[in-house]
Picture 1 (cartoon, rainbow, N blue to C red):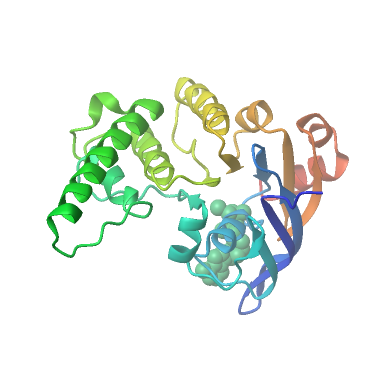
Picture 2: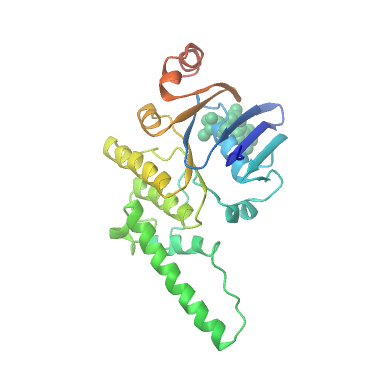
Length: 255
Ligand code: ADP
Ligand code: MG
């Protein structure tokens, strides 16, 4: 049997005395959209930080595309096809929308700077290809109309799409989305759900953290539920919705 795209086994992270993630195991295949849900403080963002490499794990292993990535840095994981967005929007305020996405393309295309005429010609061709790719991605996420605007001048929903566009520019095999719908109104969430499905359509698996259950139930084929850092359930949206342990975790928690 083929190895899954992502496999977490016994993953753990503690911050001093706080066990943020404990003995977490699950896997996902390429072409899947998986939801990661749970009450506030249940370890969702920490899990994404461990998978993306923003934080080193305290225990366990993360395998991605056939190799262990647990000890790799973020910048070593991105070229393997791992990209993420953050729970809080992070954009370069002075960059235009187009420039911000362009910066991320360099992960994939790297011209040697040394000076032969032939190298310069190929570098120019590459630059051309990168610009075309940026325009394609901006159109794909629905930001073509604001491509020339400063990243700080667009709406917060558009900044969330910009984070997704920037991640897509690295050509990920797995995209990790940490609360991509935060601050979005219903219509924007609906468009986001369609976008997530189109991202899967281009061959990128998606792991999405979200507390808007409507969005999660609509786009995910499988859902993993965390509570106090541990997996308490895993299954289809229908399974999860009627799972008494899950209902308890939400009703009994801080919500
Ligand atoms: P979620 O995203 O599910 O709301 P988090 O993963 O952000 O939860 O947090 C899980 C737990 O770990 C919380 O108790 C949080 O306070 C703690 N935590 C998260 N990040 C850190 C950190 N950098 N330092 C200390 N504690 C942290
Ligand atoms: Mg979080």
